[in-house]
Length: 342
Image: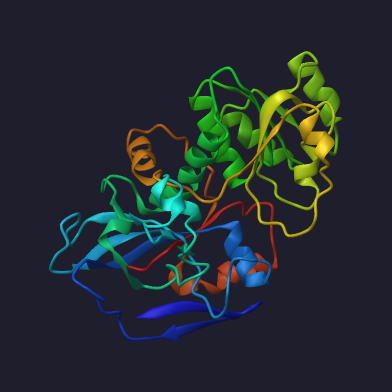
Protein backbone atom coordinates (compact mmCIF):
# COMPACT_ATOMS: atom_id res chain seq x y z
CA UNK A 1 0.00 0.00 0.00
CA UNK A 2 0.97 3.68 -0.21
CA UNK A 3 1.31 6.16 2.60
CA UNK A 4 2.12 9.87 2.76
CA UNK A 5 4.69 10.88 5.38
CA UNK A 6 5.75 14.39 6.39
CA UNK A 7 9.38 13.65 7.28
CA UNK A 8 10.23 17.21 8.36
CA UNK A 9 8.74 20.68 7.91
CA UNK A 10 8.13 21.31 4.18
CA UNK A 11 9.28 17.78 3.30
CA UNK A 12 7.05 14.81 2.50
CA UNK A 13 7.41 11.39 0.89
CA UNK A 14 5.03 8.92 -0.72
CA UNK A 15 6.14 5.47 0.40
CA UNK A 16 5.27 1.92 -0.63
CA UNK A 17 4.95 -0.13 2.55
CA UNK A 18 3.51 -3.50 3.61
CA UNK A 19 -0.15 -3.73 4.60
CA UNK A 20 -0.59 -3.38 8.39
CA UNK A 21 -1.47 -6.42 10.48
CA UNK A 22 -4.03 -6.47 13.29
CA UNK A 23 -2.19 -6.13 16.61
CA UNK A 24 -4.82 -8.02 18.63
CA UNK A 25 -8.28 -9.61 18.47
CA UNK A 26 -10.03 -6.29 19.15
CA UNK A 27 -8.56 -4.32 16.26
CA UNK A 28 -10.00 -3.61 12.82
CA UNK A 29 -8.39 -2.83 9.48
CA UNK A 30 -9.78 0.29 7.80
CA UNK A 31 -9.52 0.87 4.07
CA UNK A 32 -9.46 4.63 3.70
CA UNK A 33 -12.05 6.29 1.48
CA UNK A 34 -11.75 9.99 2.37
CA UNK A 35 -9.74 12.26 4.63
CA UNK A 36 -10.31 15.92 5.35
CA UNK A 37 -7.40 18.35 5.33
CA UNK A 38 -7.44 20.53 8.44
CA UNK A 39 -5.59 23.71 9.36
CA UNK A 40 -3.58 21.62 11.82
CA UNK A 41 -2.34 19.55 8.85
CA UNK A 42 -1.07 22.79 7.32
CA UNK A 43 0.74 23.49 10.59
CA UNK A 44 2.30 20.02 10.63
CA UNK A 45 3.61 20.51 7.10
CA UNK A 46 4.86 24.03 7.86
CA UNK A 47 6.45 23.02 11.18
CA UNK A 48 4.18 25.19 13.33
CA UNK A 49 2.06 22.56 15.11
CA UNK A 50 3.29 22.42 18.74
CA UNK A 51 1.54 19.07 19.26
CA UNK A 52 3.21 17.19 16.41
CA UNK A 53 6.44 15.25 15.93
CA UNK A 54 8.24 13.92 12.85
CA UNK A 55 8.17 11.80 10.80
CA UNK A 56 4.37 11.80 10.80
CA UNK A 57 1.53 10.55 8.61
CA UNK A 58 -1.06 13.37 8.82
CA UNK A 59 -4.81 12.95 8.74
CA UNK A 60 -7.33 12.98 11.58
CA UNK A 61 -10.58 13.44 9.62
CA UNK A 62 -10.72 9.82 8.51
CA UNK A 63 -13.52 7.70 7.04
CA UNK A 64 -13.39 4.33 5.32
CA UNK A 65 -14.58 0.74 5.06
CA UNK A 66 -13.88 -2.07 7.49
CA UNK A 67 -11.68 -4.49 5.53
CA UNK A 68 -10.85 -6.96 8.30
CA UNK A 69 -11.81 -7.54 11.95
CA UNK A 70 -10.15 -9.29 14.87
CA UNK A 71 -11.64 -12.50 16.24
CA UNK A 72 -13.26 -10.75 19.22
CA UNK A 73 -14.62 -7.66 17.46
CA UNK A 74 -18.39 -7.25 17.97
CA UNK A 75 -19.15 -3.56 17.27
CA UNK A 76 -18.51 -3.58 13.52
CA UNK A 77 -18.22 -6.03 10.64
CA UNK A 78 -16.41 -6.23 7.32
CA UNK A 79 -17.99 -3.84 4.84
CA UNK A 80 -19.24 -1.31 7.40
CA UNK A 81 -18.67 2.36 6.60
CA UNK A 82 -16.97 4.02 9.57
CA UNK A 83 -15.53 7.25 10.90
CA UNK A 84 -12.38 6.89 12.97
CA UNK A 85 -11.97 8.85 16.18
CA UNK A 86 -8.79 10.90 16.26
CA UNK A 87 -8.39 10.65 20.03
CA UNK A 88 -6.52 7.72 21.59
CA UNK A 89 -6.86 7.64 25.39
CA UNK A 90 -5.83 5.61 28.42
CA UNK A 91 -9.35 5.42 29.88
CA UNK A 92 -7.98 5.52 33.43
CA UNK A 93 -6.70 9.00 34.25
CA UNK A 94 -8.67 11.74 36.02
CA UNK A 95 -9.69 13.38 32.75
CA UNK A 96 -10.98 10.14 31.25
CA UNK A 97 -13.03 9.36 34.35
CA UNK A 98 -14.81 12.75 34.30
CA UNK A 99 -15.75 12.64 30.61
CA UNK A 100 -12.86 14.78 29.33
CA UNK A 101 -11.05 12.07 27.40
CA UNK A 102 -10.05 14.52 24.66
CA UNK A 103 -7.51 15.93 27.13
CA UNK A 104 -6.49 12.58 28.62
CA UNK A 105 -3.13 12.98 30.36
CA UNK A 106 -1.76 10.28 28.04
CA UNK A 107 -3.65 11.40 24.93
CA UNK A 108 -2.39 10.56 21.46
CA UNK A 109 -3.94 12.17 18.40
CA UNK A 110 -4.07 10.37 15.08
CA UNK A 111 -2.37 12.47 12.46
CA UNK A 112 -0.43 14.56 15.01
CA UNK A 113 1.09 12.70 17.97
CA UNK A 114 0.78 9.36 16.18
CA UNK A 115 0.24 8.38 12.55
CA UNK A 116 -3.04 9.28 10.90
CA UNK A 117 -5.07 8.44 7.83
CA UNK A 118 -3.18 9.73 4.80
CA UNK A 119 -2.51 6.13 3.79
CA UNK A 120 -4.55 3.47 2.07
CA UNK A 121 -5.04 1.22 5.12
CA UNK A 122 -4.51 1.44 8.86
CA UNK A 123 -5.62 -0.36 12.01
CA UNK A 124 -7.55 0.88 15.04
CA UNK A 125 -9.29 -0.59 18.08
CA UNK A 126 -12.95 -1.34 17.41
CA UNK A 127 -13.89 1.17 20.13
CA UNK A 128 -12.39 3.98 18.03
CA UNK A 129 -14.62 3.49 14.98
CA UNK A 130 -18.24 4.57 14.51
CA UNK A 131 -20.60 3.19 11.87
CA UNK A 132 -21.79 5.63 9.21
CA UNK A 133 -24.96 5.03 7.17
CA UNK A 134 -23.83 4.08 3.65
CA UNK A 135 -26.13 6.74 2.23
CA UNK A 136 -23.70 9.46 3.37
CA UNK A 137 -21.24 10.09 0.51
CA UNK A 138 -17.56 9.77 1.39
CA UNK A 139 -16.89 13.41 0.50
CA UNK A 140 -19.47 14.44 3.12
CA UNK A 141 -18.51 11.79 5.67
CA UNK A 142 -15.02 13.32 5.82
CA UNK A 143 -16.67 16.34 7.50
CA UNK A 144 -17.96 14.35 10.49
CA UNK A 145 -14.92 15.16 12.64
CA UNK A 146 -15.04 18.95 12.01
CA UNK A 147 -18.77 18.99 12.81
CA UNK A 148 -17.98 17.03 15.99
CA UNK A 149 -15.71 19.93 16.96
CA UNK A 150 -18.66 22.27 16.50
CA UNK A 151 -20.73 20.15 18.85
CA UNK A 152 -17.96 19.99 21.43
CA UNK A 153 -16.92 23.64 21.55
CA UNK A 154 -20.50 24.90 21.73
CA UNK A 155 -21.06 22.49 24.60
CA UNK A 156 -17.96 23.86 26.31
CA UNK A 157 -19.36 27.36 25.82
CA UNK A 158 -22.72 26.36 27.38
CA UNK A 159 -24.61 27.55 24.31
CA UNK A 160 -28.31 28.35 24.82
CA UNK A 161 -31.00 29.73 22.54
CA UNK A 162 -30.93 33.18 24.18
CA UNK A 163 -27.24 33.73 23.39
CA UNK A 164 -25.98 36.44 21.10
CA UNK A 165 -22.95 34.70 19.63
CA UNK A 166 -19.91 36.30 18.02
CA UNK A 167 -17.71 34.07 15.84
CA UNK A 168 -14.34 35.45 14.79
CA UNK A 169 -13.43 33.67 11.56
CA UNK A 170 -15.79 32.36 8.87
CA UNK A 171 -13.59 29.51 7.65
CA UNK A 172 -14.47 25.83 7.95
CA UNK A 173 -14.71 25.64 11.75
CA UNK A 174 -16.32 29.07 12.05
CA UNK A 175 -18.97 28.06 9.51
CA UNK A 176 -19.62 24.82 11.38
CA UNK A 177 -19.90 26.60 14.75
CA UNK A 178 -22.32 29.00 13.07
CA UNK A 179 -24.59 26.16 11.96
CA UNK A 180 -24.46 24.56 15.41
CA UNK A 181 -25.41 27.84 17.09
CA UNK A 182 -28.26 28.52 14.68
CA UNK A 183 -29.63 25.00 15.22
CA UNK A 184 -29.81 25.87 18.93
CA UNK A 185 -31.79 29.03 18.18
CA UNK A 186 -29.06 31.56 18.99
CA UNK A 187 -28.48 34.90 17.24
CA UNK A 188 -25.11 34.83 15.43
CA UNK A 189 -22.73 37.61 14.44
CA UNK A 190 -19.74 36.43 12.39
CA UNK A 191 -16.64 38.36 11.33
CA UNK A 192 -14.07 37.75 8.61
CA UNK A 193 -11.87 39.82 6.31
CA UNK A 194 -13.02 37.81 3.28
CA UNK A 195 -16.32 39.02 1.81
CA UNK A 196 -16.86 35.73 -0.01
CA UNK A 197 -16.63 33.84 3.27
CA UNK A 198 -19.13 36.24 4.81
CA UNK A 199 -21.55 35.67 1.93
CA UNK A 200 -21.22 31.94 2.48
CA UNK A 201 -21.93 32.51 6.19
CA UNK A 202 -25.21 34.24 5.31
CA UNK A 203 -26.21 31.08 3.48
CA UNK A 204 -25.57 29.12 6.68
CA UNK A 205 -27.89 31.40 8.64
CA UNK A 206 -25.70 34.21 10.01
CA UNK A 207 -27.86 37.02 11.34
CA UNK A 208 -25.13 39.64 10.99
CA UNK A 209 -21.76 39.76 9.24
CA UNK A 210 -18.82 42.10 9.86
CA UNK A 211 -15.71 42.72 7.79
CA UNK A 212 -13.16 44.22 10.24
CA UNK A 213 -11.21 45.73 7.34
CA UNK A 214 -14.21 47.79 6.34
CA UNK A 215 -16.22 48.23 9.54
CA UNK A 216 -15.62 49.13 13.17
CA UNK A 217 -16.27 45.84 14.98
CA UNK A 218 -16.97 47.37 18.39
CA UNK A 219 -19.34 49.93 16.94
CA UNK A 220 -21.23 47.30 14.93
CA UNK A 221 -21.55 44.98 17.92
CA UNK A 222 -22.83 47.89 19.98
CA UNK A 223 -25.49 48.59 17.37
CA UNK A 224 -26.49 44.93 17.07
CA UNK A 225 -26.67 44.30 20.84
CA UNK A 226 -28.02 47.75 21.78
CA UNK A 227 -24.86 48.39 23.75
CA UNK A 228 -25.10 45.22 25.85
CA UNK A 229 -22.36 43.18 24.15
CA UNK A 230 -21.92 39.54 23.22
CA UNK A 231 -22.81 36.71 25.62
CA UNK A 232 -20.77 33.94 23.92
CA UNK A 233 -17.78 34.33 21.59
CA UNK A 234 -15.63 31.84 19.67
CA UNK A 235 -12.12 32.48 18.41
CA UNK A 236 -12.15 30.44 15.20
CA UNK A 237 -9.54 32.67 13.53
CA UNK A 238 -6.70 31.72 15.87
CA UNK A 239 -3.96 34.18 14.93
CA UNK A 240 -1.73 36.26 17.18
CA UNK A 241 -3.97 38.82 18.85
CA UNK A 242 -7.27 37.25 17.82
CA UNK A 243 -8.07 36.07 21.33
CA UNK A 244 -7.11 39.38 22.92
CA UNK A 245 -9.42 41.21 20.52
CA UNK A 246 -12.43 39.43 22.02
CA UNK A 247 -11.67 40.95 25.43
CA UNK A 248 -11.61 44.55 24.17
CA UNK A 249 -14.22 46.78 25.85
CA UNK A 250 -17.44 46.77 23.87
CA UNK A 251 -17.24 43.16 22.65
CA UNK A 252 -18.29 40.99 25.60
CA UNK A 253 -21.02 41.76 28.11
CA UNK A 254 -20.58 41.10 31.81
CA UNK A 255 -20.67 37.36 32.63
CA UNK A 256 -19.96 36.44 28.99
CA UNK A 257 -18.06 33.36 27.84
CA UNK A 258 -15.13 33.27 25.40
CA UNK A 259 -14.14 29.95 23.80
CA UNK A 260 -10.64 29.59 22.37
CA UNK A 261 -9.96 26.92 19.74
CA UNK A 262 -6.46 27.64 18.45
CA UNK A 263 -2.89 26.55 19.05
CA UNK A 264 -1.10 29.81 18.32
CA UNK A 265 2.02 29.88 20.51
CA UNK A 266 2.55 33.65 20.36
CA UNK A 267 1.78 35.49 23.63
CA UNK A 268 -1.54 37.32 23.91
CA UNK A 269 -2.11 40.63 25.72
CA UNK A 270 -4.98 39.70 28.00
CA UNK A 271 -4.85 41.18 31.49
CA UNK A 272 -6.54 40.03 34.67
CA UNK A 273 -8.64 43.20 34.63
CA UNK A 274 -9.97 42.36 31.16
CA UNK A 275 -11.37 39.11 32.56
CA UNK A 276 -12.21 39.90 36.16
CA UNK A 277 -13.88 43.32 35.88
CA UNK A 278 -16.67 41.72 33.86
CA UNK A 279 -16.27 38.23 35.39
CA UNK A 280 -15.81 36.67 31.96
CA UNK A 281 -15.16 32.98 31.38
CA UNK A 282 -12.21 32.04 29.17
CA UNK A 283 -12.79 28.46 28.06
CA UNK A 284 -10.34 26.24 26.21
CA UNK A 285 -11.65 23.73 23.68
CA UNK A 286 -9.67 20.94 22.04
CA UNK A 287 -10.96 18.43 19.48
CA UNK A 288 -14.10 16.67 20.78
CA UNK A 289 -15.33 14.09 23.25
CA UNK A 290 -18.33 11.78 22.72
CA UNK A 291 -19.51 13.77 19.69
CA UNK A 292 -19.01 11.32 16.80
CA UNK A 293 -22.23 9.36 17.22
CA UNK A 294 -24.55 12.38 17.67
CA UNK A 295 -22.82 14.15 14.78
CA UNK A 296 -23.26 11.14 12.49
CA UNK A 297 -26.95 10.94 13.44
CA UNK A 298 -27.47 14.64 12.66
CA UNK A 299 -25.65 14.38 9.34
CA UNK A 300 -27.71 11.33 8.36
CA UNK A 301 -30.88 13.27 9.23
CA UNK A 302 -29.83 16.18 7.01
CA UNK A 303 -29.41 18.62 9.90
CA UNK A 304 -26.29 20.24 8.42
CA UNK A 305 -25.85 22.37 5.31
CA UNK A 306 -22.72 20.83 3.75
CA UNK A 307 -22.79 22.89 0.56
CA UNK A 308 -19.51 24.76 0.23
CA UNK A 309 -17.94 23.52 3.48
CA UNK A 310 -15.49 21.40 1.46
CA UNK A 311 -14.46 23.21 -1.71
CA UNK A 312 -11.63 21.16 -3.19
CA UNK A 313 -11.51 17.39 -3.75
CA UNK A 314 -8.20 15.73 -4.57
CA UNK A 315 -7.43 12.08 -5.32
CA UNK A 316 -4.91 10.38 -3.05
CA UNK A 317 -2.89 9.57 -6.17
CA UNK A 318 -2.67 13.35 -6.74
CA UNK A 319 -1.79 14.23 -3.14
CA UNK A 320 1.08 16.41 -4.34
CA UNK A 321 -1.65 18.95 -5.12
CA UNK A 322 -2.59 19.09 -1.43
CA UNK A 323 0.91 20.23 -0.53
CA UNK A 324 1.01 22.61 -3.48
CA UNK A 325 -2.13 24.26 -2.15
CA UNK A 326 -0.54 24.47 1.31
CA UNK A 327 2.49 26.22 -0.18
CA UNK A 328 0.37 28.45 -2.43
CA UNK A 329 -2.82 29.22 -0.47
CA UNK A 330 -5.80 30.46 -2.43
CA UNK A 331 -9.00 32.03 -1.07
CA UNK A 332 -10.90 29.66 -3.36
CA UNK A 333 -9.50 26.62 -1.51
CA UNK A 334 -11.29 26.83 1.82
CA UNK A 335 -11.36 23.11 2.65
CA UNK A 336 -9.66 20.19 0.92
CA UNK A 337 -10.80 16.58 1.07
CA UNK A 338 -8.64 13.69 -0.11
CA UNK A 339 -10.60 10.97 -1.93
CA UNK A 340 -8.93 7.59 -2.11
CA UNK A 341 -8.84 5.74 -5.40
CA UNK A 342 -11.29 2.90 -5.89
